[in-house]
Length: 239
Figure 1 (tube, rainbow, N blue to C red):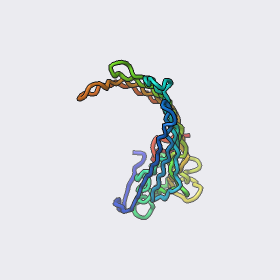
Figure 2: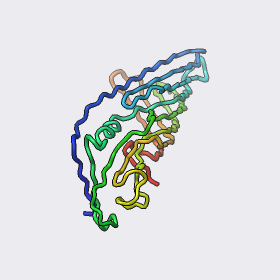
Figure 3: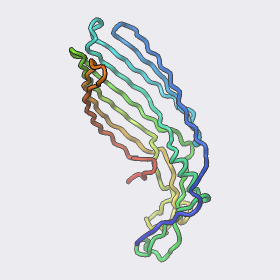
Figure 4: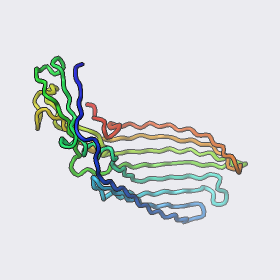
C-alpha cells in the first residue's frame, strides 16, 4: 500500500445545536382575479451562531378572466437560507487535534521522501461562518379542463452562494506531503469555508384528476439541471 490512515481518540462528543425558523405570510386578494402573497422567513441556529438570516418572499396569482378562472398564472420569488448541518460542527469538534486525531502515513515512493512521520488532519470552522443563501423564482401555468382535469406547468430558477465546502489552508506547496507548508509542518488544516456556488433551473409538469373522492390520479414529470462546485460540505473543491 502507498498510504494508510489511523484514527485515535474519543469519537463520542457532546454539544448542543439549536435551530429555529419563523415564517409570516399575508394573502391579499386585491381583485377578484388577482392575489398577492408577501412573506418573510427568519432562521437562526447556534454552534455556530447565525442570527441575521432574514429571507423575504413574494408570490402572485392571476387569472386573465375574473368570471371564468380556468386559467391561472402564478409567480413566486424569494430568498432562502440553509442552516449549517450538524455534521459540519461535529466534524470540527471531533477532529480538533485534542479529542480525536486522524493520521495519514505515506510510503517512500509516493512522498519522494524517506520521512515516515504522520500527517495529521485538523477540521475547523472559518471565522464568521454563516448560513448559505440562495434565491429562487417560479413561473407557472395552471389550466382546469372539463370533468375536473387539471394540467400544470412550472419553470423554476435558482442561484446560490456561500455554499459550504472544505479547503486545506495548509496544503504542501509542491504536493509532497512532507514538504514545505504555509503554517505548520505535517498538518492538513481542513477549513469549512463559504466559497461554493450553485445555479440552474428545473421544470415540473403535472396532470391531475380531482373528481374522484377516494382515489387520486396524477401524472408528473420533473427535470433538473443544477450545477455546483461544492457537492457536500465535506467535498473539497477541484482546481
